[in-house]
Image (cartoon, rainbow, N blue to C red; front, top):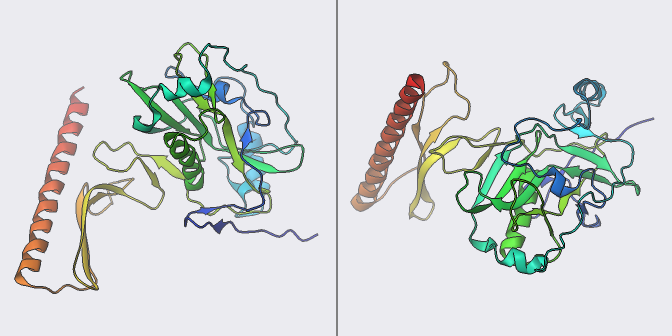
Length: 322
């Protein structure tokens, strides 16, 4: 028997993922392996609580035996072959205020969005429903007290193995909530010691997917940015930290960009070390004013880069002295 391996495509927005116009809506927790309100992670959870979906040895054996390049060959992902039917384990809140009114009181549109990695070791879970459709559970979105205890925030928690398509799918739900849509249907109230009366979790935790044994997923994996000076909240494997940037087009077809950057993972052999200035231009010509503007931009980025490296050095000294 010949097995066909299908590649993921690129959707209209330009990002990679597996997609199909005939797929059903994302799975709610009536079908998902874990109820969302149980899956959301509190501030004090720093280890995995409960039995893992797939033991490490089983996952490693599966990934080693799978066809190279398929989703099943990813050692970070859990896969459940048997169809899963799980009822909600958290009953809807019986509070006096309707869910939509309670959500509106949180002023979602103005809340900051925080992206973090799982603190209890949860992994991306690919699973199948009784109808044979495949789903992918990459993380959770919650509206909750901020992790630092100051105000409230929309917190996106990514599971181990999450990729760019996973994160963008979760952020689409954030945009939907901020626009005021789905407040009466997309969210579920959370009852937990760390939660308050206005803590909610997204009721859809799995996106439509494809057979992991016959499909590839080209979307790059993502990591949450831990660099305090970087302007990005997350990175793909082939990206870099960025402090500041400027883009100019003095004349049609004549452009330049200058940015202050830093490699994601540095070692003693990396060049350059620390923050550096990166200049891109195919060609450059212009008036004396154009040249002056270019030189000014370059000097500005030079100073930004110097201050960033000085801040890194000061932080390193503080950590060594602690």
